[in-house]
Length: 422
Ligand SMILES: [Zn+2]
Image 1 (cartoon, rainbow, N blue to C red):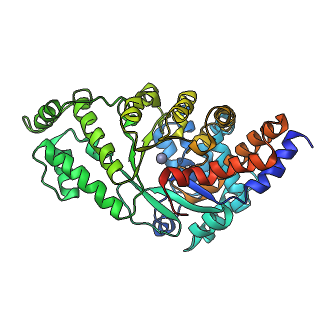
Image 2 (image 1 turned 90 degrees about the vertical axis):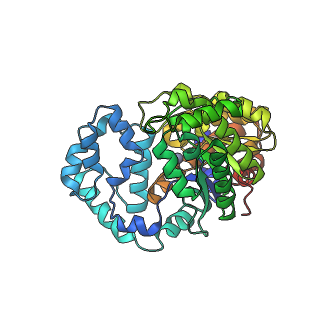
Image 3 (image 1 turned 180 degrees about the vertical axis):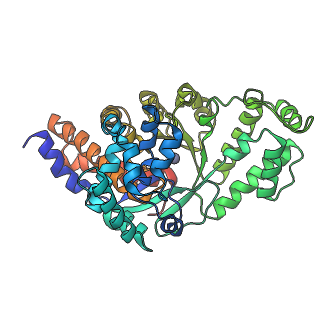
């Protein structure tokens, strides 16, 4: 048996491991059903990023994914771009999903219309359970719905964003935050206690983690800032008509609040997730997202648990080293299998020689549409099986040891990182 054949054997055993999915953005099932989305709408997460990368105008991309239009004219819009983007892992997740869930064997107007019929018939109450449990063998997903904790607890555990407290830098944002937290915000201490109250509140509602996604807008370097410096900046938000601070001016205030949020997460026994690496949508500053910028937090908050999303891609070696250095840091492959499948195999091969297996989280779908979780997990399991098969072929692991690693990646590591009881 060659390595490829052995990987296929191993894959069957890996499929039997129930998966703890570290990251999804799924909308509530009722909303998914009401949206009447079709197979072309599915490319908005994330194949449309590659459409933009080849110069497809945003208004054309919007028409392609809009389920209100017919399939045939929308496919005509996509067709000229398709040969350029079909090689990518994003596109492969999409075609795999269509193939296995809706028996769609080719990408053409007729086949896509037929698959849409099947997708709409399937899209009934119970569809989420059918995809996530029956087709994917997922035991639970960590669900990111921004500030919502309400979710189907048979399938999901919520994570909540702290970004709104860190990013507030105009009077309007402060007022909105005051309204949503039902907390008067007239001084820095008010903002800190609103954040603390919010974090305790969402914890009581079942949130297991706090997510920080500010790497889309600024650097992940969070310096130690004095209260006096932060207070001076907070008060300046109210100058003139409340236009507030620029991102650059607001940085020390944001740094101060982030430290307070980390402390509150720690006190509430919640994991802190950082978006590190590649930013969805592209056209951003990737150097802001280097996870090594967070090192001072790992050194200071030894009792906190940190999950580094997206393997810090392209800072993947750095991410692995951080998980190796610090007992409270996990390296998470959420989203990465579809950023680049081949890249993920290289990262995982590297990490498995570098990082303890219980520090690597092997799968997070990171999609809005439940159907795509299937296509993404298909790729993820294949990557894991191929990397492990190679290790067994080299004599580095026995088959039993390889399967134990898979159990860590897909189940035990996220259970430990998020202190789940599954
Ligand atoms: Zn995400």
